[in-house]
Length: 218
Ligand code: UDP
Ligand code: MG
Image 1 (cartoon, rainbow, N blue to C red):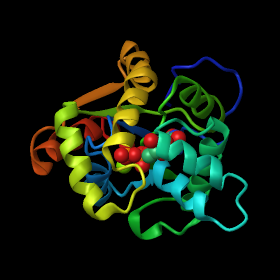
Image 2: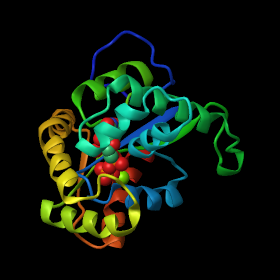
Image 3: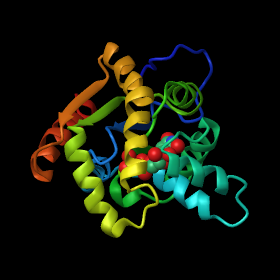
Image 4: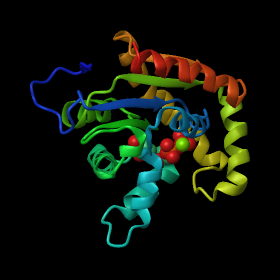
């Protein structure tokens, strides 16, 4: 059974004996989404991007968080944890409720790549204590120069309000100030697989898959 980095006697919402969670971190443009798509093909994960869930909530009719999310995303700041954790919890429950028999899943089981989360220590704690402890952090690491170039390229077609130089700079700052401490904490518990994501998609995928394999089939 996976033990949490955070101490608590409470039972989590999902049973860690049945539900496996990998957190996927790395700066904006580090390649998280691209690599997650590849890992889904290999290992039958459900891929949940916190940013995508927030963007969907932002435009959902009747959402009380639309404006708040829009502002945070543009400013590169972090949406209050309750909002994001709740979206993730609901998306996980929905994925588990689907019929995954063909993929060899049995009832109540799930394997998740939680992409772009936790970006801040309080999110990590809230998720691990209330929702489910994480088995491993996959940390995709490259230089700001590489990330900037990738984001500007993506910005040509992504339609994302935050793929512009001004927002990107703010996102880099949030990443360094708030997200790096999360990675450093997990490092102390040997729960980080750091992968240089400067190389080709294929090369990075090889390393990512090896790290995942170690956890799934020890
Ligand atoms: N975001 C957030 N909390 C999260 C994940 C994302 O507030 O847990 C917001 C934040 O403003 C971030 C934006 O969503 O800058 C875009 O996140 P996404 O993960 O899509 O960006 P990526 O890092 O993949 O480029
Ligand atoms: Mg992404």
